Image (cartoon, rainbow, N blue to C red; front, side, top):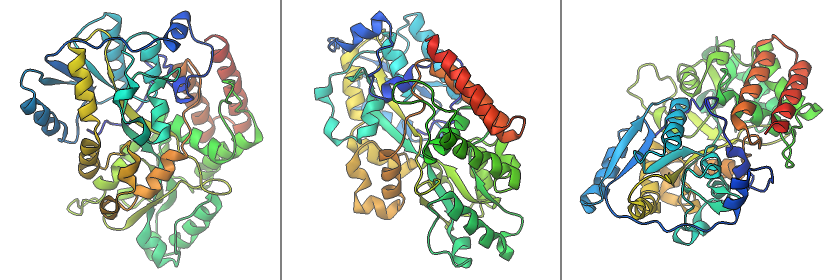
Length: 439
């Protein structure tokens, strides 16, 4: 199940980033504090359940559910497909929770939604001793916790990677992908001098005004040694290091290193830009790896001609933003024992292998990244594992929805040229400080 990563989160303020930091901030409500000391409730009830998730665009999900349903005829899972757009998914899940509807049993939550649902008492705390906590990648565990208690099961992870035109790098005499922005720019200049590089730009990402811009901006800032929000939960974005990160994007658009079209790119538009031969390098998620291997697609100019590496940074390998999804049990759903059993089965290592092999979905089990057979099929796995292990959570602000909207507004203003980097960061610092003060 590949959920479209249009990840706009502004419909509802998301408390998620706090959980990504381990739930250590003491700025929650009294409900939050009671959650911190609570124990998992008894999950009773056996019978039919529903799985609420974004639209399945892979064609794989129903076959997985069929396997469960054949083995559990009295505990069948009904798929409830929500819209492909993540904003609308979140809105429907929140509405369902606020009305205490039992229409949804198991919820497929983006990692930045988990703690909002936990803090509001919309999902059940899960028994950690029934999940293989020691086999998960450490960063993905934090995304499923709120105040260090487990409220969801890690289901899919995500880390940004650099896609490179390996064929053109080879033609230009470049032996390996770049590890710094300066190396990437220098490599591009060599490639663009080739006949095959005529008309191309250097680098593309997701710079449209939506959640992907928050991801790309945060990655640039973190990869330059800066931070958007400090470990104390206070904004710290108006700094020289943060400016270096933002200026990587601003100057890239200004000098043509980044095509202006990238200001309208989300994940899929940027993938098509790379496939169409418009950029030498692309920042994107692992799900596109398998999609770009389709040699039957006449519009695809890169099949068999690309490789992946860690994101570059200012002075060395950069830092990805952490993505992914978790499965939770609705507080208001029926047959919660079945729901727990289903989640344990659905997120098992066996099924994680299926998702990886069929959809190049990033698994949550460290062992799958180290499997020689899987590495042969997906050479990027060691790179992806490193990306996830070194990834940074998105800014740790309780009112995450307001924060990401402010980031998108100011980052886009700077990248599009309507504000200077200095002014954008100054305004962003003030906006984030106001959001934190009012949380």
